Length: 161
Ligand SMILES: [Zn+2]
Image (cartoon, rainbow, N blue to C red; front, side, top):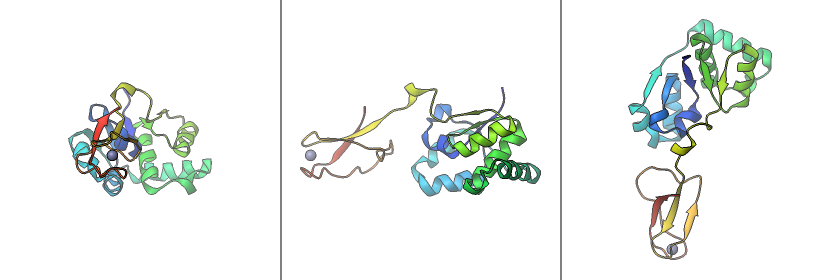
């Protein structure tokens, strides 16, 4: 089975049971910047941290230049693309520019959010006082304070929906 290279959206959204594949060390910095609460999960996951070689990084840049996508790609994106080329793997990404590069290079890609829908929980906050419900993309499965209801001032409780 070809190696899967995961882009940061997979690190952000996938449950631990699915988090298997290759990633570049710069994604750790990116993740810590935007979702510190995922750190423990990423440490526990079976990820293969690899930096692509200079040669494949050059290939990735040339590829993205050819397709016209390079302006929209970050350094991390280019490293992920380079690693996919290097491993002959499948790139897991929702970024259409990266997908475009995969098509041009003849490498396979898969979107981040497709399979394993049953494993994805949605969360909502319920007011312990007036039972008001907040469904928000900001609600995450992390522990801790969830704030108070603006209507009655009671604390929110998180539940799966
Ligand atoms: Zn309330």
